[in-house]
Length: 395
Image (cartoon, rainbow, N blue to C red; front, side):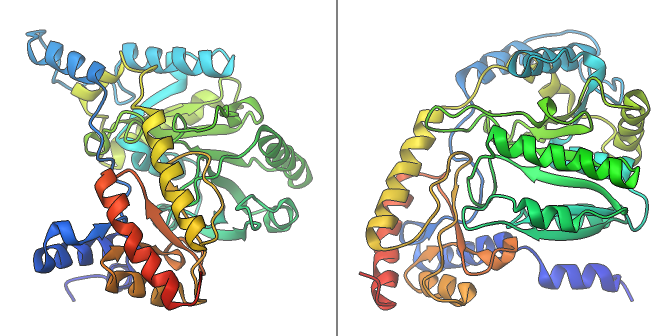
């Protein structure tokens, strides 16, 4: 047998995001790209900010010896210090370079953290809907995923979370602003989750880590502020990237940040550094580390994303779709107009609109659409949404 059964099964079930994206490419080749309105992938069409290109040109014209060599597995000291300084400004905590490990994106960061903290059979709690790759990341390192449903506003149900936490619970993963719903956890919600974790730690005499996946942290709308979990739990660990806030998904640059007063912090950081190497990442890309060092307070245009959110949300609601209004990120997660969200997405596909069924995120009865795309595609998709709503008797 040339392939393990586990991998074969994983490929068959696969990611609905990629499945729909691949089908979209087939449709574009058949009907023409201008006839297909693809809202499947969270792949920002905006270019990085001008400040990125300024630093890139400086680096390209530099002859500084050693800039492309290996560095510490944790990353350049100067880059880690810059990240720590920015987080210190945002949170009021005193983070230093030794609280940061540079990684190959947020995915690399999460895998490094899970590899470091999990023993076989340890449980990791996820809130549904969730980013589907979390299941794979947890499985990669012998963990067991435990799913807790959210409420109608996609907020964690604290009673359900309390029931789900056992002596085997090692971590929970949160994602705010959230993919696929766009919701942002309030400060009160963060406080309540973290307070519950501490009570359960005391009850079971265990340590429970809060892993916060934050690639959309700076993409927040309507003047809302981001309440960092670092403020509410000493065992909070941030895993993030610059894929979204600097529109650099292909560069795979991110970092881990640990609470500066986390118990056994140095041992954990040493574990992160070790796992960064042994998982095969070795270190975050050198060139990107040199560049993002100077871009920690820079983002793409938040106003442009908010404008797209408002345009798509208003039009869909006016057509009769039901949707929680996103507060961040660049996704909408409306209710499907029929119980079978896969069948509904297929109906949209007949109208040349590509979306992702909610079942792919553990959120059946919904579908995800991304608005980090060209305005022409957003506008062009409306007729397909309208026809599909009419087909199912809405408005």
